[in-house]
Image (cartoon, rainbow, N blue to C red; front, side):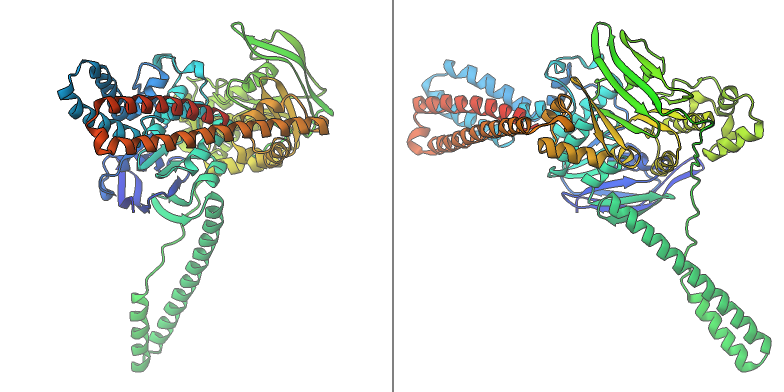
Length: 634
């Protein structure tokens, strides 16, 4: 056992957030903490790392175990630039590296009498540096940064140049590079694109330490978690398996508990009725029997009533009028920002009933496409035409369409002045804003609350074309489910950008993948999209993403498939050759280590210098090879 959380309680003023949290984390286990917004997941993580005191209970970490924590919002800067910040996670290795360099400079100035003792200390430090990963930690840091979406040219950027999201990614990279025994990650994928999320899934799946994750991405949790801690109503329940297994188990357990509770309540009522009847007989034997039954009833362990349903968002998407068959023609559009080209000659069509998800890496222009369609940004060339009777409802992930000084009530009433006060209140109640909540200012709302206000306005628009930018951001699991159901029952047309793969899988019938080369169309949902890419390119990778825009599935002929297969074989041969050279050099390195330990060499400074020079040469070449191997295995 690595971590034990025992009967934690935490309140803020009169609000009791955590009422009894108990669970354990074994070594190597991957645990996800789930629950709706406001249930105390982030608070629980902060108590575990000691940032917040618990009112009661205990957190016990295995002796000498190391712990690392990533908060949702990260502003700390640990180095002058991105790469230095990540490397600073291994101060121990940086210090040894500096000491080794200093000792190497001293070697030429030592006389013979000092050399033997000096070289012995040097080789001890060098061996410690080696076994702690000193010759690979720089290339590992580079691999982590590239996996998190940074390019080589970004590495020298100053931390003060970065956005909050970029700083969070750098902090995640630094945390991964430090490789603690226990990783605590609070919403680690909020600022990652799909490619980086998939990379992180692979990294965490193979991570030797333990991980505790708070995340709302159901695909991510399915890939990573082997245990789920459900934090509901302030209490924890532990489930074995991933998120899908948890949902199924929880539903069965909840149903079983409700039936057991109902059965017990009926038994209690029955026994009370029997006791009352026996007492009414007013006979000594009957009264004794009644007393005996009452004692048995008093000893019964009464089950708690099942938790009442938490209020849920109620969303119904209706259209006021039907559109024509052709909904949108996005034709040969080119867009740039400050001389930086975003996309060139981009074209696609949207027809009535389409449910189109636009996927792609950060920076490829997905949100820009939506802004061009909605007239929120200009474009250099091309044309965007709407079909007949098309009315547009737009959901902006940044909620820039909300007026910060408005109350929630006035935000809806200003947008739809023909609605009565009762209708506005009823609408807001459907989005979990009741009583005085409706008078909260927009500027004071959380991300989840702002999202619900925007969805309420979208529902009232009754538009037949919905354009949504990251609609599931900030929504809890229940609200995501409500949105999915509403969109699946929607009679209009849907075009959206999302990195929530579960959501895409549930709601899309077409995928448009956007890369630097253009758009590629895939029919079907997210699972169909991945299956088609694997069929075309093998394992989905960065190479596959960059090529996918060049050819469509329909036009990928036999000759093209052969060319791709030949490239894959060529790449594998290159990887194999590098691995063979690494193995050979590691064997030579081991042989040199044995030479160092021979008594006749230990007193021969010339021989030791020769061996050291050869070892350094091997280490430099090994680091080059590890870098090459990492680039060929994204």
